Length: 441
Image (cartoon, rainbow, N blue to C red; front, top):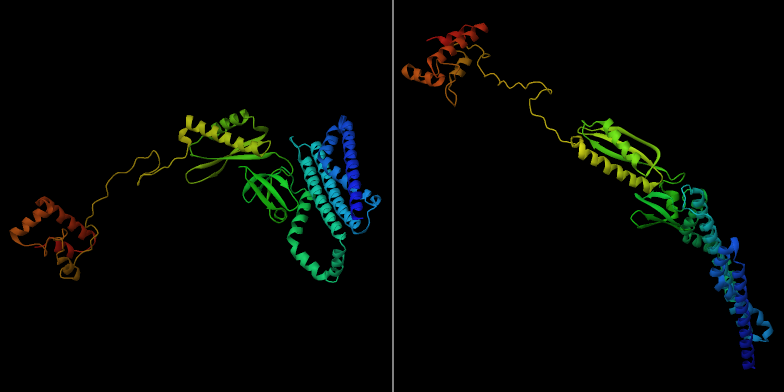
């Protein structure tokens, strides 16, 4: 009895497999024959991407159709039907997901982005890609739920879990909060037009292009071929720069620090020549201005427009190279220089006063009263010798005094001249005691 049932099952399976493969081959031939004209690319892509899932789906559908007519009964029939149903569920989900990929590929071919103004097309591609991924996730979840519902034990387990739905819901919500937040952030990016594929952005001080937008993360291709992967919620909660949100054209600036003697008009003429000769300039606008001045240099800024960010970068490098070559070749004195100024120098063109300072004399010495405190202070010899301003009461007497005076003043004439100066000083200050003490004896 068991052998007869197994034989009938094998025969039914062989018939189902043969019929399914034949039907798949005929459908493939029909699609290739119809792949002509404007629908040729779409039908060829459909046959290439969906041929295997379509064949598997036909195969398990044929097996399920042949089981009732095979005469198999009992537990074997139930097991065969259950396995065939599970396989059919997953094969159908596989086929639907591949069909979604085909429609996405077709839409992308009809929306090329290799043009100057591609903002709308990049927006459409972003939305189509996110919708396709979201639909694929939903189909996978539905397939998994359908699989679980085919098991009676799991249906009973699900019924028992409904009693604690509140606790399960709270736990599931806390566990999936981050993931669901990223998913909704991805949908917000796609339909709010904040971010699109191939947008030029600056995030975390990194310049790059948006390479992929997934439901939970975004891939940014940095200028040096690195990949920066960020969660989608980053772009909805953190400010970032989008250089191509409305248009791809940008302005590039070049900063030069020059000496104060630089001729701005001549430099502006050279900059215009370089900008006008560059194929990277989009002929939209350019300007050169002195925007700042420091203690040692002036700050010159040159702004030029370009079609996109990479062209703007190359244009800025070309302008720097051209201007520095011009300065080094023709006007090296315009480059920044360090200056120093001599002490005592006046304005440029004025002669410097090199007259030595006047000698220190006793013209402002106060009169000394004989016998007073000041006279007693002056009578004490200093550590280095006698005070040259006084000759009486502090120097030795007689021949030794004359020798000391000669050594101190150099000659008798110098000594007499000193006494005349002391007398004039005393008379000018209105005292006579000083003259007496300086000349008496």
